Amino acid sequence: MSGSVVDMAAAQRGRGFAREPKPGGDMAEVHAELTGVKRVYPGADGGSVHALGPVDLKLARGEFYSVVGPSGCGKSTLLDVLAGLSAPTEGSILFEGREVAGRVPPGIGVVFQEDASFPWLTVQDNIAFGLRRAGTDAAEVDRRVSYAIGFMGLKDFRKAYPAQLSGGMRQRVCIARTLVMQPRLILLDEPFGALDAQTRLLMGDELLKLWRETGATVMLITHALDEAAMLSDRIGVMSARPGRLIADIRTEWPRERDSRIAAEESFGAITSRLWGLLRDETVKAAGMSGSSR
Amino acid sequence: MKRATWIRTLVVIGFVLLLEGLCRWGVIGRMTMIPPSEMADQLWKLLQSGRYNGHILETLGNVAVAFVSAVVGGFVIGSILHSLPRARRAIDPFLATYYAIPFFAFYPLLVVIFGLNAAPIILIGFLFGVVAMIINTMNGLDRIPRVLIKTARVNGLGPLRTAWLIKLPSAAPQLFTGIKLAIAYSFIGVIAAEFIMSTSGLGYSIAYAFNNFDNRTMYALMLFIITLVTIVNAFFHVWERRIMARRGQ
Ligand SMILES: Nc1ncnc2c1ncn2[C@@H]1O[C@H](COP(=O)(O)OP(=O)(O)O)[C@@H](O)[C@H]1O
Ligand SMILES: [Mg+2]
Image (tube, rainbow over all chains, first blue to last red; front, top):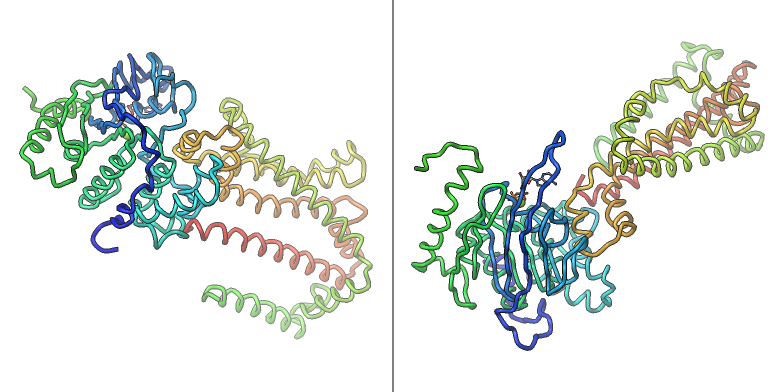
């Protein structure tokens, strides 16, 4: 591989992660909807931690939505609740018109903030894990896994174990493991946190390409404002804990785009607008007095 | 072979040769110890005569039953305690001080309860091994990263498949430690129990030879036990190394 982390040729062969094209593709169709969602955790010594909400959010089918917010504001909690990994204390969640209750609905894929690779499986067995559990036939598993391995630039590490990989490569294994399932809604929790700045940009481009290729709905959680500004159709800004959505910003980027839009004038404008909204919240979250007048 | 392995091998060989020399030159009297070469020779004769086959099989059978029930029982009890944090907190101090109890002091009581047969011997071996397995099972389950359990849920795995496909392999290193300790403790428990109060088995045979000033038989049987335990340990060691090498540990 030269230059890029991921194999562009493999990407161009196309259809690797893509599902059968769906008729319509109505952008206004609501794909997931949160109404009055609140999450309170039981805290230490009988107390409680109000982590999230109330949050109202509609994700349109096929849109690229990002969430930014200060650390500890409830972003991961929002993801857990939307995915059905933890029940909301109040409120309701719909995915494709059905209530999300007690289990993760098929069609949702999650890439977690922490390293979720299985240390006892090789790279290819890690990536094939979900497909095998779902009873996909062996030839199809092989095809999709090979494609993902090529796409993610893991060709030389097929038979390696996660312990032999860097943090960034392990995260790519986890991303591949999610993508081969061809989810219709992909939730990513700070997936590029372990990568250096340049690789982040490239992975961002790949994510955009995947998003276009698959037509999936994406919700990306990130603390990097430029990443959000560069990748998203729409950005939700969260307040300090308890996390509420305090702003909703549309970027108006064309669907065909990549990291080079960072050179656009409006990119700077969006980034500084995000920072303007977040500065006070970040000061609050960090417990600093700040100099906000 | 690695350098450390060479050094270790040389140390063992050197020690055996030293012992051989000390015994042959009379620095160590024959009433105290016989030379290692004679131990090996005597062991070979004992095994060929078949006189001790019954005792050996009996002890190995006792150890096997004690070991397997300690591993299975320890795993089940450990898993249950892990899922009941309150019960676990209540029991934790007992587990922590468990190995301070001199079990063998209660052996006569067990004989009174179960009779002079294999049951109290196996029970001692089991009691010795089970707690190591309980502690290591809980330790392993504690260390399973939450994100792996979440991944299982995203993949639609139910509790049983999560236990089998995620929890078990994730906790494998600690379970392995438990298994290794359980086999060592089962051996110790069974042979010591046979030694104290039994009418058969390897432990009994050693004690019998000791009481009859039969040094040759006593040392031959000791050599047998050492060799056996070393082989069993080496087997587990290789198996463990194989598993851990993959995980880069
Ligand atoms: N399982 C939990 N139990 C108790 N408190 C939690 C739990 N998970 C998260 N929290 C708390 O909820 C708040 C939000 O956490 P999180 O959603 O992880 O924030 P973020 O992802 O934005 O950094 C934090 O104060 C955190 O300590
Ligand atoms: Mg988080």
